[in-house]
Amino acid sequence: MFQTLLKKIVSWLREIWSLFKVIDDVIPKQHLQAIRNTYQLTQKSTSTYPRRNSLQTWSSQDNASSVARHRYIELEGYSESFRIDKRGRYDLNQLARFAENFVWVAPNEVDDFIADNIEHDIDYIDGTTVLWTEKSDCIEWAYIQYSALADLL
Image 1: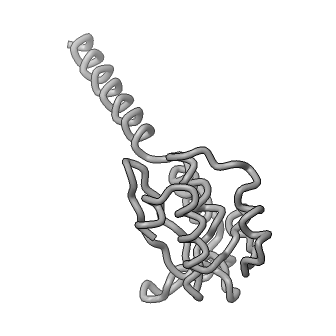
Image 2: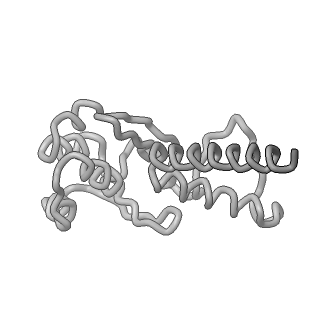
């Protein structure tokens, strides 16, 4: 009886392990890191992080260029929740990382595009550099890289 119980527990653990493998393949690493960061924030004391009303728009910072909302885009099996600030600007660095799933993007491609007198703001959210640019400029950049992405913006 003990042997059958042990075999059943081992088979359950194998199934759970295979589920974890499937989840790891489906969920991008960036989302897992965001989940871990959220979990770490909930572990800290609530006195340092004020509780927000559920009707308020989520933002990671309270300054003028913080994230006001996200826009979910899925293209050819890849998906991303793009950051949009309060002025309707997108994060060009995030667009570049997403475009790398489809085409090769040169390391200085974003810098070259910004150097052409494109209005932008630089911000830091969750330890990453955010390059806020107008939606029309992001569409132009995406069209140069991969036109299907520009059509979705």
